[in-house]
Image (cartoon, rainbow, N blue to C red; front, top):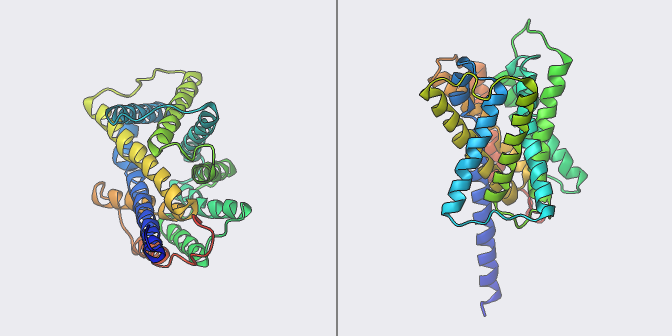
Length: 314
């Protein structure tokens, strides 16, 4: 039998390892999701409709993940109770994508990005409602990163802002917030692996996009004419979809949905850097300050994890 001090040391090392993996996964989720413009911009320029793009994005991601699980001899099984929650997660994640794209029709993308980044605030408030209280360091990080996002993506003057677009963007943030909280807090899916969780969510999303496209009318291959289009769809499925969702689920389970939400700031940072270095977009001094604030806030949150006596996973 191990001495009590040695047992406590091993337990603390296990907790620290989970925390480290959680932060790394959260950063990876943000960075991978931020590569959306790398693949999506070319597809939209080719005339691929949004619902077609989202269907193949989720469908290919589900296919690749299923093959990966087959080779790893992982189980696809889920009970009826688990399937219900997994389906809900798929609807929430897909709903976040749909409302985001729809918001672009009413408001500037910069304002949409700012409103969507309200989701760390929503996550924190939901957790407070569940009587799990984020530390003051986490609250400060949320406020600082939101300030950085305002500098990064505030719309220029003279652009029209319509209420439906604002509500859609906020709806996207809410869907994403509830996705993070359900992954972390639902006891029904506690024993479901991140791979299985992600697979069911992807299949649900793909089915939802196919249904919407059916009602819209038009072919499922509209706008997909070249090998480059298929390559971009595959890239979109693997990096900002499959990898992002897997690491997002892992991070939410290891460090909690609130801190995972703050790490989501790496998504707009990555998108901006891709736009600057690959698409020749301008990086202003204001944006550089915004990036610095966001990175400093995340580093502060990671280095100051708060009172360990508080409830875990906040």
